[in-house]
Amino acid sequence: MSLPLDGLRVLDMSQIMAGPYCTMVLADMGADVTKIEKIKGGDDSRQMGPYIEDESACFMQINRNKRSVALNLKDPEARELFYDMARQADVIIENYRPGVTQSLEVDYESIKEINPGIIYASISGYGQTGPYANKGGFDLVAQGATGLMSMTGEPGRRPLKTGVAVYDIGAGITAVYSILAAYIHRQKTGEGQQVDVAIGECGIPWFTWEAAAYFGEGREPQPTGWRHRVSAPYQALATRDGYLMLGCANQRTWERFCNDVVNKPEWIEDPRFATNSDRGRNVEELEALIEEVFASEDTDTWRARCDEAGVPAGPINTFSQALSDPHYVERGMVQEFEHPTAGNVKTLGFASKFSSTPQQIRRPSPLLGEHTEEVLADMGIDAARLAELRASGAVG
Image (cartoon, one colour):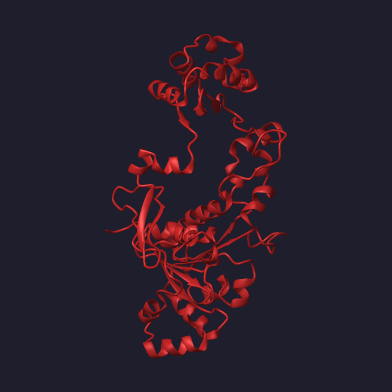
């Protein structure tokens, strides 16, 4: 079956998370992704546990549908092999600290000399320019530096990071859509370009409500805990046996909640709760009133009432509960593949669904250098020459 990105050839020099997440998405949509890994150890995430039959579960989660070639890019012969691959590539992705690819002579300026149409995506901590360009960057540091942690958690308590690496994944996603935009531009003009994605800034454009408050009124965003900073009630609320996530993001939903869920029509006319702004200003009083009512029934009961009334609501699931939810199971959010060493491996599914060109797992995550011989053979390198390159330490 044809896939959306069939024919797109990608060389992936990245490792750990942001870059590999980007190339996994491209590969899932049909791109031919070849990982270029160092001979000793490969992608650093191969050394990250837990392990399944000595294979890193972390590595396997985001490196499906790719091939692996082990090259020593410090070796001139290996570098020439890389140049040969680059001549045929559409996209190159790397996430070294700025300056490293230049020292290896595989930077954008070097590659565009041999392939002017190349789309060269660089993912780094702070980008290729600016005062912080040469600093190393990590998701955790970015969450602090961009203000995210000052908004996360409960008021007056220690700042909290998010439960997942939002900036690493966000950088990967940003790189995906930026690469595809550059690819469309090249289809129109024939012109390649470098795409510069910074882990330390990819999330700043997500702070839309926060920016509205800050630019509009000069209000510094503060942590709101389980509440929303604009809408109310739009938060976690205690029930008899747990918590319900309730989303009354507009007046119509609020009124349905009052009339059809909790049978409190008087709340609609209460001046404290008349508008969303009123409810936001008086959220503590509102929360106490709702939880007093919610204490009479369990979470499932209130969820069912909300569903019947058309009020968005849901449980706070554990990760295992979420993955076993019949809805996500039917939507294919857990997939499986057969790995040559680890056996049957479960992995997360695809976020988007295509009616004509659905994504599929065509390859398991590769062993280190598993496809070196295959890829080099396609370039016309025979077994004798490959043996020489291996003996010299150019390839693995």
